[in-house]
Length: 173
Image 1 (tube, rainbow, N blue to C red):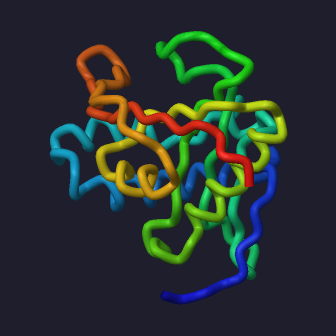
Image 2 (image 1 turned 90 degrees about the horizontal axis):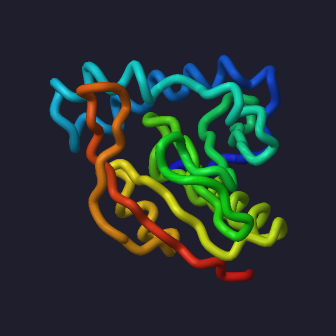
């Protein structure tokens, strides 16, 4: 495992294109082992775009390596993802998490999730929810999430994306 210096910080408007590029190059590579190519060809264009409102929420973060390259991104919101319910003060929804597919197993995702847990905990969050890809279930389980059950995320009419609803209760450090 290659060790590198990683910095986690709140995303800025100037990070939008870097996050967009990271999602576009990494989601197809990461997800191909668990989803049919016929689904990915329609889903990837919809899920691999940075969401401006989310990136600028103040609770979305980027992970940079020592050279300043964005190698991870993700965050949390009190508002549930579109079509998934409302907003609760004590629940954080994990949103649009990604690590550079060329840098997996370097601690990028763990560093990011640790930051998410700390910032959300400081904001009074007691519970975390996520709609995990099939690929990321083991990662989230290693981060303390439990499987609630399988689900489908409707991306667009006729495009249903299999996912797994997961939950974690806040564990103060």
